[in-house]
Image 1 (cartoon, rainbow, N blue to C red):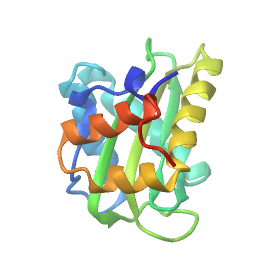
Image 2: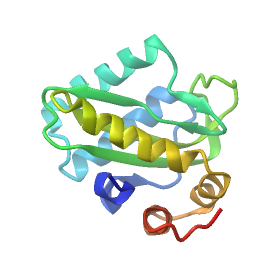
Image 3: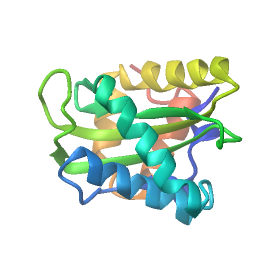
Image 4: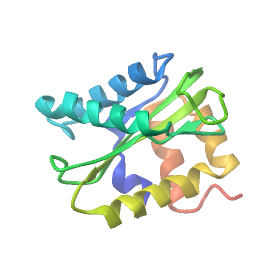
Length: 158
């Protein structure tokens, strides 16, 4: 599975304006609705599911990244939104540091193996310093898309 299989240019939000988790998630869901990936009527239900998941443990995993995610019956196809923040977001991260890159993953409830594959792909890339640095330096949706595409095709190096 590749990052560009999950994300579209329309679901990338460079320079999130949010300073805290819930507002950042709202911005990402707005992008998913605008891109017609999420139906407007399902937005708040999915957002509530993501927030409920966050109550069980922060998906701010450290090193400036967070991967909020949800598996839900209304989701028919894997999708993700990506947002970056220049100033950092209080995501209640495990290392207590601000988050600069957020991958919001939406997965069909009946396809847990695809969810795990997508999480593995996202984490494999986010664990690389160069990927995190390039993602953070990207200023436009097209720049971020280029970083994702480079990672998919292993053009970032190590």
